Image (cartoon, rainbow, N blue to C red):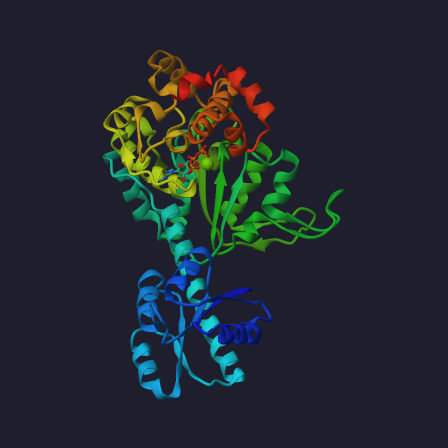
Length: 465
Ligand SMILES: Nc1ncnc2c1ncn2[C@@H]1O[C@H](COP(=O)(O)OP(=O)(O)OP(=O)(O)O)[C@@H](O)[C@H]1O
Ligand SMILES: [Mg+2]
């Protein structure tokens, strides 16, 4: 790791001496001739450690120290002082200096003090990073929502999280099934063991068995080494069977056996292995209907349906739309480097009257787009995608969207054009209508930018006054 060090002294000779003594193995030294100059450098560079003289014309050592403690509380400062003023140095330690060195100093001693201070700085930085990560994770895990419909879900989660009961999460696409599954695991007895998710719809049928149970080397062409299956990976933890309704019938029989007898057999290996997994399954299909159509085994259905938790569609929890939208605006705005403080009343109203066929995921996408388009701190009606206001289209769209099966936008091209347009408009706003600058902002050539303007029917002079 490289470190940046700032030496502050009014004597250029001393600055030079320290620079050459310390500029080595990963340390870059900056210098400043007084306190004010030092503060400038601190604004421009990512400094890890300051070594400052005590007496300096203008802003002196103690003043600089006080200023640094206020602006950069995590930045260590080493104070240099002559023998006669060691008392001052002690005082400066009380005021928050990390250490002091007495002049004239021994270079070896200085080296030790500096490397200790840099280690200290690294630990502080690591802590900061870990705390930020932790907060981010807690946010991911925090289930937003306080509507009566969602409170029932939270109660169900609470009552079942510490047991080993099999859980079946049902609900339309984007209602938060995976998020709830992760929350159950995280707040259960198996939290420190693995959570392994398998998307049963995404794995080719021929590979599912080996994916689930593993295989022995040579069990089939392509099995070049032993492989541990998902059941074993999840041992002592939680196995999340996502889109369980899309599992082929042949595999359903084997999964049933694994769930009933708690043993699995890797492909090409007749020896059984014991496994201890808690299963959470999820589907957006109507499994009873699938059972009636002979697409899903009835016995497996009952095996999974021990503790069903139905997740409400977003339109059944309208009260949660505003808190969810705020939650997404804060987190997504922060990622985009924007500070969004909230939504205008009209924007909230528009979101509350839309029916959200894609549920929370659709709301999340909508807010993400709005944070990109918004020019102020408040998301306004005009920042929301047009289809929210298209009530006629909604009825038709919804009747299709509520049917069984995963949903995709009815017209992919139109959906993509919508996103493209949002990016281009945002870039034009930011560049005050200068097309070359806007093109650069979104990383495409001017030519391609111009082509897209034409294709999307955007008239620049109408956007920027
Ligand atoms: N209660 C909640 N609070 C905050 N964010 C949520 C909540 N529920 C879901 N989300 C977010 O909404 C998105 C969709 O959730 P998730 O992937 O869990 O849905 P799903 O039901 O598994 O969807 P699909 O059926 O399409 O797989 C995710 O980005 C998730 O983080
Ligand atoms: Mg999912």
